[in-house]
Every structure is written in C-alpha cells, then in structure tokens.
Length: 185
Image (cartoon, rainbow, N blue to C red):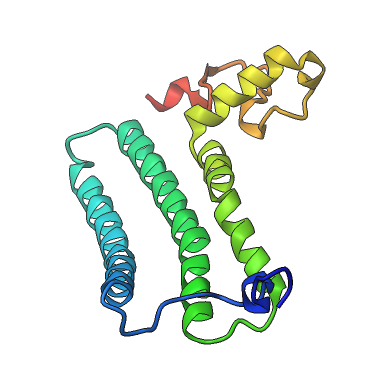
C-alpha cells in the first residue's frame, strides 16, 4: 500500500470490473454484444437492398442521378465500416480485457487511439468518397491557399485537350469529352 491506496488501484494494467454474473454487468454485456451483432447484420443487408433498389430504379431515373445515389450510398457505407471497426475493435478489446487479461499496455493505448480518431477518419472518408463534398473542399482550399492553385489539385478529368477537326463536332462536358462525326448522324 502506498499513501493508503492499494497498489491494484494505482496499477494501470489492472481492470477493476464487477463479477461476470453481476445483475447489472451481465445484462449490459449481453446488450452490447447483441447491439454489435445486430448492427453487423443490419448494415450490410440495408446496403445490399438499397443498391438493388437503385438498380431497379435505373429505368425510371437518369443515369447521373443513379450514379450520385450510389456514390453517396458507398460513402455512407464506408463511413459505417470505419465507425464499426474503430469503435467495435476497442469495445471487443475492452470486453476481452475485463473477462481475460490484456497483457500489454500498448494494445490498450492503440484501442484508445482508435476511439479518439474514428470521427476524423470518417470525415476524411466522406471528403474523399463524395465528389460534391470533395469539390467543395478543393474550392475552399484554393480560396484560402492560393498557392495551391497549381496543377496539383486538378484531376485528369478536368484537363481538356483541343485539336482541330474539319468535319467533326466537339462537345465538351465537365467530366468527359465527346467527339462525334457529323457524317455518322
């Protein structure tokens, strides 16, 4: 004992937990495990059913709308996976530490880092996988950091090559270039 406090309280490798059959602990652990298994089942099922529904709606909606909806769905799914992994792994690790022994402090510190940075990684994934958000962030960065206006932020789809064609019509869109021959109509 040091200063009237037990060494078990001062030691950072000890987890103080109630017995496994405690009337509060056991239902709480059961609820947490049930919630994790339910989320691990419902999220992929929802993603697959929405993806299939978008394929069915492709007859009624424009191709651009379907592409936008699929991009947003994929971005949302990736964010859900990030949250699931970066919150689920620490939760499993902490439950393991309570029930068994977690031999190294570094594992617990890494698990705490996962919890701490899950929001940042989710935000980065949203910016990276959602084109309208990515374009908005690029324009904000270009406005506040004018020295970044060089070609480093331009994507290959924004570069337009123009050549002279005598009997062709060139129609330039933002994401693609369509070259059509007048004689083919």
